[in-house]
Amino acid sequence: MKRLPDLSFTNLFNISFGFFGVQIAYALQSANISRIFATLGADPHQLSFFWILPPLMGMLVQPVIGMLSDKTWCRYGRRIPYLFIGAVVAVAVMLLLPNAGSLGITTQVICWGLTGTMLFGLFSLMFLDTSINIAMQPFKMMVGDMVNEEQKGLAYSIQSFLCNAGSLVGYLFPYIFTFLGIENVAPEGVVPNSVIYSFYIGAAILIGCVLYTTANVKEMPPEEFSQYQQASADDTVTENDAESVSHSNKPSVAYTFLSIGLVQFFCWAAFMYMWTYTPGAIADTCWNTTDVTSAEYQVAANWVGVVFAVQAVGSVLWAAVIPRFSSYKLAYIVSLTFGAIGFISLVWIHNQYVLWLSYLLIGCAWAAMLALPFTFFTNALEGNPRMGTYLGLFNCTICLPQIVAALCGGALLSLVNGSQVMMLGLAGVFLIAGAGCVLAIKE
Image 1: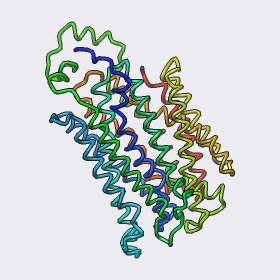
Image 2: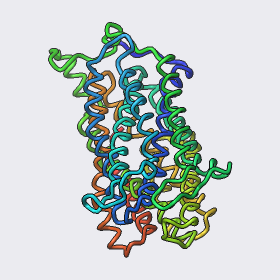
Image 3: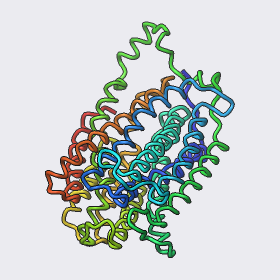
Image 4: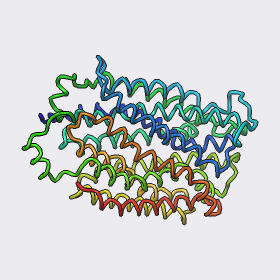
């Protein structure tokens, strides 16, 4: 098997640049879904159930996209066609979702305590997250296909940087538009224009970034690509090959999958609760309101974008520190521990500016979660011709914890007497557990 050639920094950057636009869409979703559904009339105990759809669609879609793209070869490439299709659908849905309360849809309860506007928003969210997942997965696969083992850490760090830069922009849009004079309040049941315009601009940037990557990245044709792949499962393994494998220190794919998956379980459950409960938590602790129709709640909801942007800044800064650690495992443990401290500190903070310190620490955990699991796993997969299928399945270690956390969210919220900030403290406990599980990973 030939070694993949080193790529220039520009090529590594171009492979992941479209991720910037995709992450703007994901950030808008993450920071505003609870706000949108609370505005449409959802009870806090219902909020976590709305968050089941995004990871559920990711778990269903990404393995399929991985498997299909492994077998796709056309004039536009192997992964890029799926990237483009996902982006186009995401743009269409981003124009619809924030208008759920403005289209004249009934506000009467239809089923399961959901009104017509909530059901419309729910189906829009389902299609949005499906399309984001379709667009997101090809970037990870292209790094796996085109980047050698020595450069993968750098490639995923670039991807992490672009991811966080996109998050920063997406999180701040509502706050910026409010500052520019766009209305941040609206009639009951209607999403404010500051949020609606944020989704519109995010959609435009998304399609522009994806077009840039499509124009500047050329995937290898099948004949060239096959030179860098290991023998397929049906090929005979020689005695020398078997001896080489038996003396290798490289952990098995299955062991790597399971050990990283255990860490991922606690990490992604923690961040699911951050996305779900931060709006209500800081509205309560820093603005002393739980009334979603109040102007104070909408100001607090804008501040969610600000603290999430601070988290993204912390993540960008920490991503530059991670490669300096002597061991990726040590970097992982330290990063998750810092994030745990950030989450737990929120229980005692009542000043909106002090929140920045907590979210800077949370950003350290986020930086590690974006880069290190894929570095460990793709190194274990080096040269495997089914890279896309494996990465699609690996995405289940991201999606399943969020689904479990969302299903349990309402019950756990009741156990803490409806305190949404205590759910953020629980997220910190999850990150401590995740840091302990890192010890099981073999590099």
